[in-house]
Length: 209
Image (cartoon, rainbow, N blue to C red; front, top):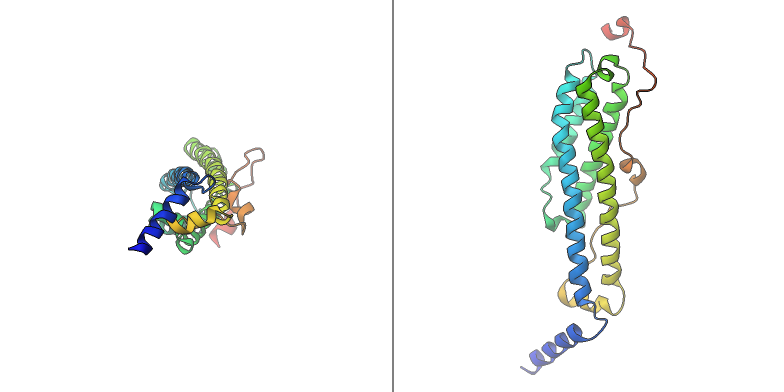
């Protein structure tokens, strides 16, 4: 009983003492959750664009099937991961999610590069509209990721520094995983296509080989 009273007294002291950080943890935790929700919204927006983009590109004769297949497979892997709020508290699951989204970014970038060799696609209004939507979504993903990175950085500083780290340990506020710097520059660059210089179509003999 005495131990329980002592523990309760210590708990109350931490909550009421200035600088314990309890209220800050509440605030920053909510900020991280809100920032994460926006990241997921933008990733979902991109995933929703992919089927229409693939369907439009499929209409182009002799388009690289391998490129399309990689986009389809990458989208499937990215959307198969259940991105629950708990994901941001699981470093391994978060890393897996990040890798899957990065793979989809790379596959879409490759698709856009390959599309430059097909003048009919570049003249296709539906493809151009989807390209613009995709680029806009990639930009919004970058903004949302940056906001999430900043929110997590603030939270993690509070969780690790003294004396708020004591509050973190008592209430289970563990540091959260963040987007890594590995391939960050490549992942964050939106896929783009320049329509300034038309590309020459591939020779018929090359297509038949």
